[in-house]
Image (cartoon, rainbow, N blue to C red; front, side, top):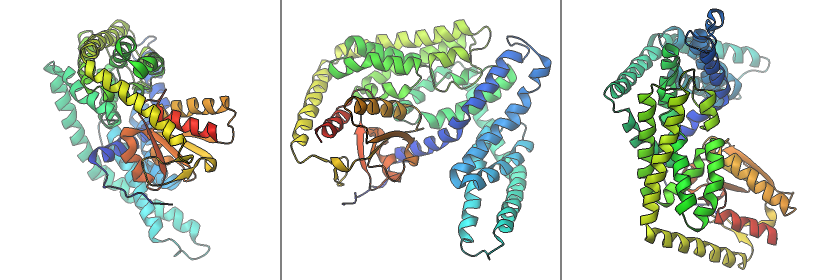
Length: 475
């Protein structure tokens, strides 16, 4: 089997991987964040049913529970259970030594603690005398954890708090000057390049939680998660798109707007980059409406579904939240529709590309029943037993893709092939084929250098998946 020559990963691929790492620290704990958000929405003085006794849980939960969960998860991702313990020990030093909720600090100290114990374990591997394993394991975490806790309290915590205060001051200045909608100039391009998790989980979530503790809600939870711009874009493609784009857009609307999987609209923007203008203007208009109505959410909506938005909207904010989503959708729809109607040449090119893909699929089927995707690696169809769909967090678009493809296989009575979804870095080694969005290919290659990778543009009806399905059926 030939080994693919792997180019040096681009900065974008490395940032995507970093964003994915942040996401996978936050994602397993989203339920805890939502629980805290509901607690806040209900029981603080301005909540639906104010209750002083239950309100007393709000502060300790955001100060201790949530950062410790993040740090523990981050440590576990690096070094398993021992890493989780180290991460939590280090985080308590940050928490006690600072005056703000240490979300950002927890996402740093957790992986750091995991890295420290992982390096230590590697250094003593096969060197511990028989019978002393348990005492070495326990005292290594105890001593290293103690040192990390002290370091966190006196040094790491204050540094992170200063950096956090700097970022908070900068964004508050942006809010006070009325320029908060300009964040869409960053948010919307970052989304379609799969970099949204870096800014959302790394910046907006921590800022939002801090503001919610003080005000009971935060606009920061809405600046990058608004489903309105994506809805407007997909509606425009549903009415004015052509061929595959027009056929798939209505289905994408349901999954994007109600299911909260925003990755569904990314390929449409990438297919016609000018539509990014509509997304930016839609995002700006939504933020403007949220700001005018002083609207916000009580926690980060994950997934970014309209149902999540409504569930996390505090008392007195429904009008502003709903209008912000609808206005964003309307502006995005109008601008995108104009772009699609004027962009005649691009429509013809899209049709030609789609037709060429179909012809290429037919040609490939007649050339030996082999699959060769994005590499020199050759895999015969009858050897395929496991197909893995992968995405940034392993729980959104990859889950959708895997479920859809599995059902198609079942309709063809192909039951011997296992189809599952994973985070890119967690795809198991026994996978025969990995399916990712084309903009995540470089990141996939970082972790899976010698694997056959199929890239797709569209999660619902992609020509490359159609080729694979036809090849499996023919076998």
